[in-house]
Image (tube, rainbow, N blue to C red; front, side, top):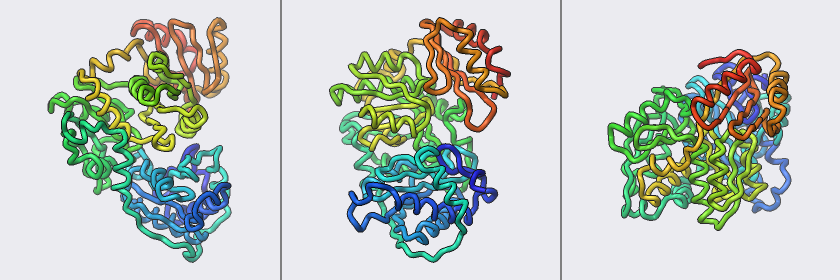
Length: 463
């Protein structure tokens, strides 16, 4: 049963089958056991050593699932700190702000409305993935039943004021006092940004916000809450152009990710955002490292070096990005998926902080956003292309053998670099697919190189 709901980085499945209240109770028990057995709990005040922060998103199934989850935790003697209806980044903030042993957000992120799940973090708000405890929680939950009286306590905590102060580290004082102004189109995707943005940013003197899809109580998504899909950005792009906005932001369902659109309605790649914002954080810190996922444009590393920093390539995924942030004591990090990571946020990602940082960097520069980000557009990219293939390892080996003169590595899938073009091919964790990202000097070069390597990778899947 648990194998159907546990994924590589979180718990996520359709409700009520296979995920339901009984399963949630068992996961709550197993999560509490795992968190209560961590090393380092004695560094917390004694009263906090059994406290777990718990939040939930706006999905209609979230209240019953989070109640069952909390019941399971309390039956193991854990004390629940219920932070209520919040965006996902609020939970690791709560873990650190309150001083909890870990936290859980009930959410299915960008999945359709009939999905739900749990994102688990441990001491310090560090993510729990398959290699860092999630497999242990899964195996334990498999052995438990959905029964037990509540031993631990539960208390509600409203942390929005503290969270606002935390996020506003990233918001320029000139926007906070209104001495500079920006007009921004925000698509909340009928998700948690529809709660988070009003609580944090509405009423800020320098922010004139055009609201799109902020209603989040009906359980209905006007479009899939996944801003990585270009079609889901159309409302943002249209609003920016029609409403004369300086920038557009589209959040995903749980508001830990966002995509950015310039004032002309053009989508700006998150790798370019990472390089551009990375320079800003490097200036503020007097140097340091910036972490980016290995699918990112070479211009990202170039921008980091030009900003006096050390570029650090990472495997794709928040578990790996956060580890790289910690290992290299990085000032900032970003993924193509729209996750942005901040040293001031315990190395965790934050959609709210990313929004604040983008707005601040635009007003500090003074130019139109398209002109600012134009400095980072140096190469042509294929975007992610999927290939269906039965033997993924053999296909990646064919790619390496086809280019013996290339500089190659296997940090995450296979990357081959021939100087004037390069590509990364990564296997999907859940499907018989390889995912290709390729970059070259021009659109024509990209098209030619993609056509050249297509026969090595399998059958192209266009969707």
